[in-house]
Length: 171
Image 1 (cartoon, one colour):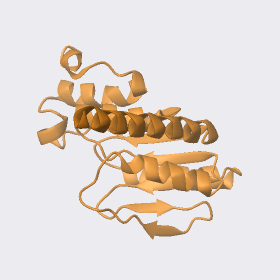
Image 2 (cartoon, rainbow, N blue to C red):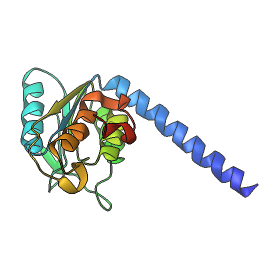
Image 3 (cartoon, rainbow, N blue to C red):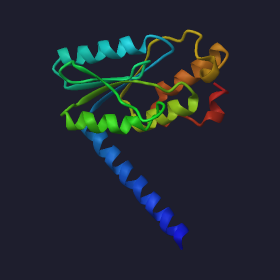
């Protein structure tokens, strides 16, 4: 009996979170996800500035060595994490963007492994994905060969409809 109560509570919490995430995604009509092996932070900053200059209300999220939020007025604030980077922080950043009246978000993707790229795109459901470059780097997570790295980055372009990891290696 206790088991089923726990399962019901967890399932209820997951359903509530998915409904909230769907509501946030409807409000944030433009969602740009920046991927690549190098240059993501600079590209995210530039895109957020370009959107601001064109009248959009944008929140940027930098995931580099020092995670930051870039607010609609261009000010920056460190993103305080409880523990290591986690793709679930996308939800709290999307909440903050919606509360700030944003219609656009530009997020640097912190994910490097195929599994976390799929998870990150599942949370953000980007309307646009940008790959900065594909230099051989991050071999421990993205893959050892240029083909494996390209397959991981291709998941970014496919968005939330990315195939399972098993089919990635066949690309």
